[in-house]
Length: 394
Image (cartoon, rainbow, N blue to C red):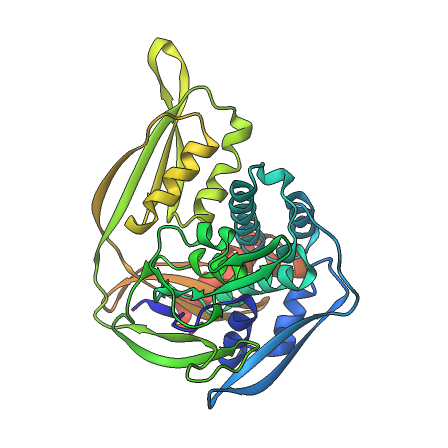
């Protein structure tokens, strides 16, 4: 069965609320600190405390800048921080894709390019830690699927570096384009970091899907509002009656006049915009010109975001689309012990039959570097460990 993480955003979402919910689910604070210490970024500390929000016990996380961080970072500055870090490759890639998506939203608002955008609030140390930390904790949850409720954006106005704006402010509005939203409750309930993290991971939106609940985590916001608990709730469980048939949108376009340098980063941006997969195929186009077929697989509700990205990032004048049915194996993750350390193993099953078992490459790569052995040695040890026993749920 697939493990599902459900974002209950009925009271909004923010980066610090997501970190609090993960700690509430059992992630040790010291482990979160250790992961974020891989960033070449100082001048902050992470604090956590148990609080009450409208009578509900929840975990509140604060990222406190110890010295005033007044830098107005550009996208390249944030990407450089990620590149210099020792974070897992998958975390780096996901975080970079999210920051690029944020820069594109800000650029559209201010009529400039992503490279020239100044990250104001979101370029500060606390926001960088929130976003990278959000990627780290959601990866720690080892979910097969992320599902979200419609996002409650709030109402009223919010004061930002450029002035006072109606809720949702322009960048947040672009980040939630194409997903179900509504406004209820006073103030800004979904922050840009919250919008980025939820929409960057959730592939479905709606009510809580059928599942057996394992545990629930509550991450508290800073305010204690009356009549509505100011919390982001994460619900984790195993899918009940997992369907093997699903719908997937296939979007395609050919280009023969787009520079390969521009196409290179496109895959990461498509994945960051919610695509399930994306790939290039060499094709021969009219007049004998060599070209590239860009194929994107995406949930149907991400169509507009994917098309917008293809039009903006390539020279195409049109995008084809069709909806396919597909049969999917149920996905889960197990943890096995090897002589080099614990490794996650991704499983694909139908009912009681496991058809595919493959170690998480990033785990093997990290352990191989620490032990000074070849990656294939760790891969082989993980597979041997899996075959000798089923392992534990990750």
